[in-house]
Length: 161
Image 1 (cartoon, rainbow, N blue to C red):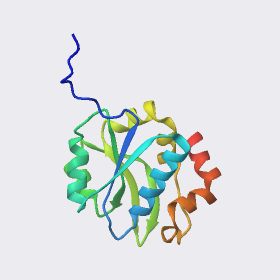
Image 2 (image 1 turned 30 degrees about the vertical axis):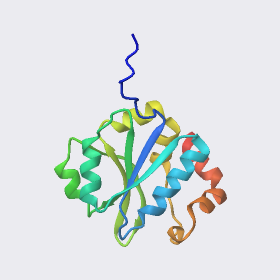
Image 3 (image 1 turned 120 degrees about the vertical axis):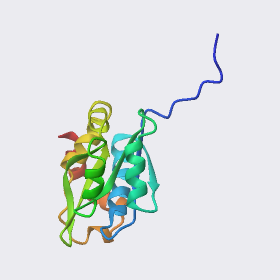
Image 4 (image 1 turned 60 degrees about the horizontal axis):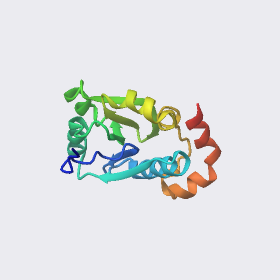
């Protein structure tokens, strides 16, 4: 007998990118990641804005649906270290700092279970996160889609490594 009341699972190819508008422009890197992953890896990405870092990291630690991958490119080091200490067993940094400005760094952070799931389910996305690095000081003034068009080969190499 078919149970029609069953809740449909979240799409298994969805990645949620949470972001908070802050002094380091993580919105650019969030939009660039979404554009890259959708264009080059055919992965559905939902950009989800948060009012502040506390709200973002609280939701990241909650990980309501284990089949949905939820990450952020908006971890600001050293400002967000207290969140990492507070949620030491629930949050995990993926890769390394990918952007640095004004003595602060941006890193990608997820729920602790996400990196291994990401590596298994979306190896190209995992590789992108681990290999991404930006050295253009004016990058955040650019359009993410335009930047991707000009740097497609570089981004593809990040995904293939």
